[in-house]
Image (cartoon, rainbow, N blue to C red; front, side, top):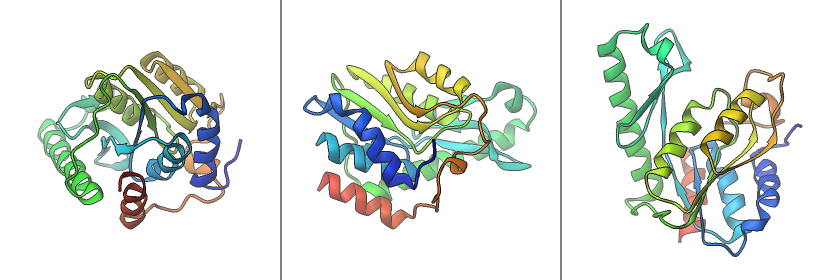
Length: 210
């Protein structure tokens, strides 16, 4: 399955999540790309939109490859094999840098608005796709701590193996395409996959939160 862009992927996910319209739902997007999809889902379900902001700690020799992921509150989830092979002081410093960046993004994107509570509600977590699933997995666990009624993971594309991992963590997984032979990058499944800028994130969130 190929998506034209993030808007189309969000609309297709929204259609797949249609049964939740009218329910007590909060949509949580992982910025920046996930916010475009989250906006489409929140609009269709007439639900509020908020953020979960885990940050990848990239390998010192290959920044795109995640050694760990860190949350705004400092919780970490690591690829243990990779984490064991890097300098511990470097890892601690890199994780702290990313934690502060997550906090900065919340302030910039939401202007100090307090996070929406998912307690006793259906929390729908969305991103524009996953590869290893480490970032998404930490985001699920972060939401779990806030006592939602249900956590629904919603993604357009994920490798079959990662989809199985996420299905075990979420109450429900809605994935539109879970190929056994993954193409190696989320962007390979989109015709258009430009970087989403801060200004677009701020505008989309403003439209759904007032």
